[in-house]
Amino acid sequence: QVQLVESGGGLVQAGGSLRLSCAASGRTFSSKAMGWFRQAPGKEREFVASISWSGGSSGYADSVKGRFTISRDNAKNTVYLQMNSLKPEDTAVYYCAGRLAAGWGSAIGEYDYWGRGTQVTVSS
Image (cartoon, rainbow, N blue to C red; front, side):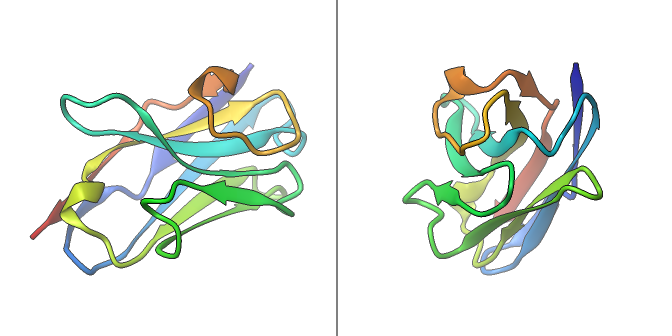
């Protein structure tokens, strides 16, 4: 099993930045691709970003491309999501997820482990 704990959420003004962290414990972290998803009130959970096990490749949702950056530190068993130029529509609970595969992926059903989420609120 892998346990995932997100942190770094909070309230920020539009145009501001936040850095989310996801600490993993349990089974080997470095062999797993990781991802970030988000869910706004009344909406379905959606893909935000994902990174391969090595950190060598990554993918982003069109809505965050150019503003968000995913990265990982396998020595620290941690994955990050740097969020810049935040917009009110980025307001959501952000979830960290891990999958039993090396390559990054965008489908929710491909992920095997999930954190409990951290709230991000962007005020206008």
